[in-house]
Image 1 (cartoon, rainbow, N blue to C red):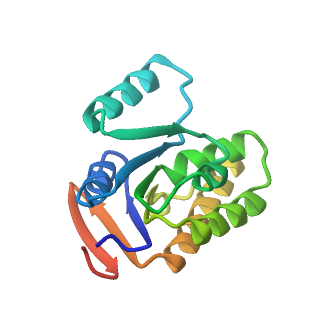
Image 2 (cartoon, rainbow, N blue to C red; image 1 turned 90 degrees about the horizontal axis):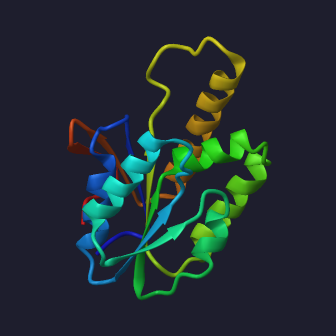
Length: 173
């Protein structure tokens, strides 16, 4: 049984998305994929297409770069949701100069209200060097705060490195 909220953390190309997809696929529920990426170049378009092909046709995809909370409002209890990923969502908020604390509060409230189990993928960006510019430092701090807020609510927190999951909180289903 998938917990109410799971957080899957990791670095770039760590295997976190594949692991999160497997968590959702292991359920008997409809599979909903909330995609937060925005396509700005050919490389990103290729990455999005590869992810879509790897998932297959049994997923219902909701492309929502900003209004993830509203997307969760449409989910029923016969589904499991994968949000991939919180880092791109936060990037979209910062670049679009949205009110990050307000949007984060709305997301956390929507998670509480959602009747379906939710798996959120997010990057761990705080293990590298201190960025050399203010925007990057602000983003790194905002990502760390977002991850902490989600982890505090989550029943399951897993970090994936080199494709290997390590449970930080809770138990794998």
